[in-house]
Image (cartoon, rainbow, N blue to C red):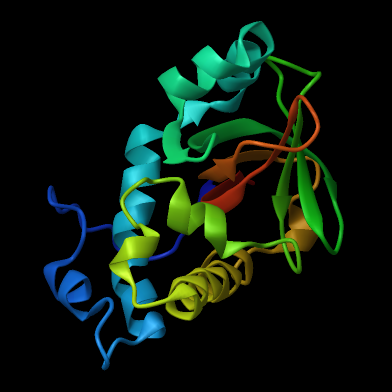
Length: 198
């Protein structure tokens, strides 16, 4: 069977991570959230792929001790918030207009969903890497608009190319970001990469 790889863009790894031009433009009068997001998304994709932790391991660690799990496996975002770079693999047991639901074989108790429409949120992608901070921008408007632009990129480049009608029952791998919170054992992964085995 072939592997259909949906990847946002060619991934360019930069050890300083934040693109120098984007860093210079952030917080200035001529700053463009759209241009910033387009420049940063490939680098964020690379970072999440490199640092992703299996969702089954995260789920088990959170059950054992949420505080230790967050400190060891997540990124401290301040104010008791933690972001995670996650990878989930398993069967796409349900695909509807809103979500792909993945059954993780290693831990059937987990509820893992990938948003397809209105539930897509760019804030986890922006925040969970720990490399983009509110202080990089002039105000809340710029900061939020960057998240909005990440959402548009996910919709256009990650979700739209998928043949959703062919995914159900197939093996799926997703890599993305998750912000801690919500019901136990439930993960809503905002995707930067989706692979479907057809």
